[in-house]
Length: 106
Image 1: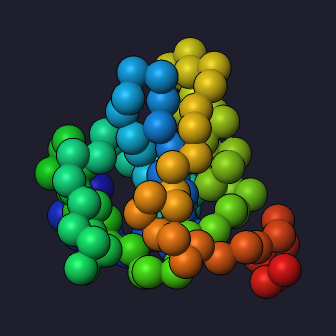
Image 2: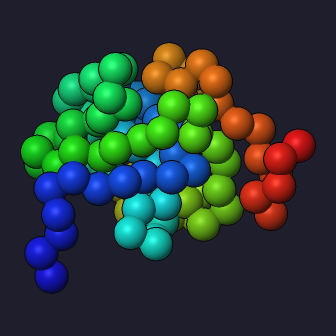
Image 3: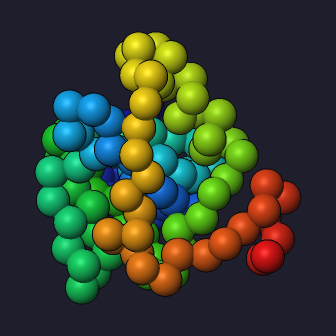
């Protein structure tokens, strides 16, 4: 299946792993997703570009925890033997939302 080069991402976070790579974690195309390494970020358009050339379009103030994305992140970390990561979302979206697991505003 060919995916578009530009994908909208919702309920997103940015995680930094010990080697310094940063990855988007969120809901894209209806599924939990972990991006490849972020190589560029355009704050004006809220566009993340990854090492594969894919562009993720995020909404300012749209970052938030999502249980599905968290599960995908945990699975990805296990697969790549990542034992720690830092949430650096605020560097990209200082207006991030506070959401509960159910998706309600808290």
